[in-house]
Each structure stands twice: as structure tokens, then as C-alpha cells.
Length: 189
Image (cartoon, rainbow, N blue to C red; front, side, top):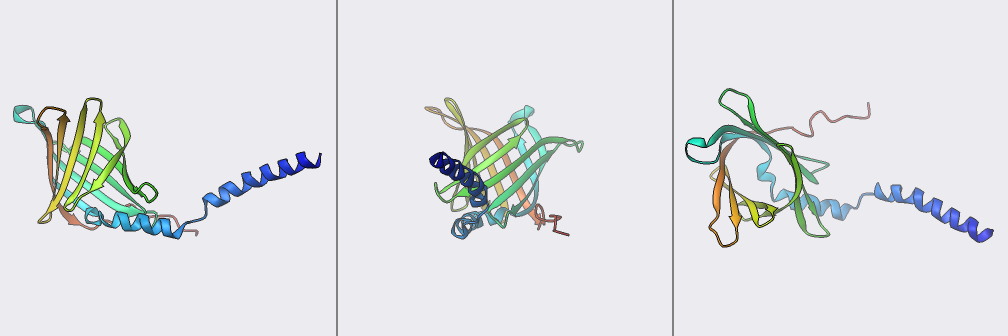
């Protein structure tokens, strides 16, 4: 009976200890996350410019806006993109959470757009970043650069044995800082 009681006590303690351990911060891990996301701090703020999907007479042009900022003490970055049609209606809307995992040394973009969601590897580069959406035999590759204050991002359809096919381009200029998403956070009183 004493052995059974010890097992029950150990199991109960593990159930109580697990949530407490999950709430204990690891300062080194948090700093590694902050340092990694600092490489992409150029994205923070508000941006506006033109985006084009497709080409020729069927190309879809929008005024693209982005608002981007850090949250959770700089350990994640939130992104919201909106593309406005000529009549002012929203033609595109996306939301993303960018994070870094020190254990795997990998950046992840969790993206929600146009009724779809997914986790995608994002790789910072000297001048910006690259992220990809694998779609079976094809990959959608987005390549972003910051040059002379202009954020350019292009989307290419990549299929083995074929040249990449460009289907998207945006060119944005930063027009200000943004307190989003941290502004308005709740306080204890």
C-alpha cells in the first residue's frame, strides 16, 4: 500500500510541477530569440507601396500596406499585410507570427492568408530573407530585400527542371514607426 501511495504522490507532484516548470523563463533562450529576431528589426514599422500579382492584362494591382512589430519582449514578431484595391476594398489580407527556435536554430513564419494557414521556414539573408511554401512537385519561393529604403519582395513558382516563374512583386517604403502590437497591452490595474 505504501508503494502505491508513493506512486500516486509522485504522479501528483509531476502534474503540479509541469505547469510551474513551463512558466519558468530561460533567460539564455529568451536572449537567443531576441538576438535572432534583431536581424530582422529593419522590418518593424509601417510600410506602403504597390504590389502586383500576375502579369499582362490580368495582373492584379493593389496598394500594399504592412505593419510589423515585436511582442513578448522581442521574442516574436507580428506582421499584418493588407492589399487595397483601387476602390478601397481589401483585396488581400495576411497575418504572420515570426519566431526563432534556439534549439533547432531555425526561424519559422506561421502565416494566415486568404483562408489558408501554415508554418514555413524563413531564412534571413545579407539583404533580407527567403521563405518557401512547398506544394508537392512545386515550391513557391518569396525573396525579400531591403535596398535604399525600399523593401522589395518577389514571389516565384519553382518547379524542378524549369526556370522560376515570377507571379508576384511588391515594392514598399517605410513611412513610420508603429507601436503595434505592444501598444494597448493590459496592465495589472
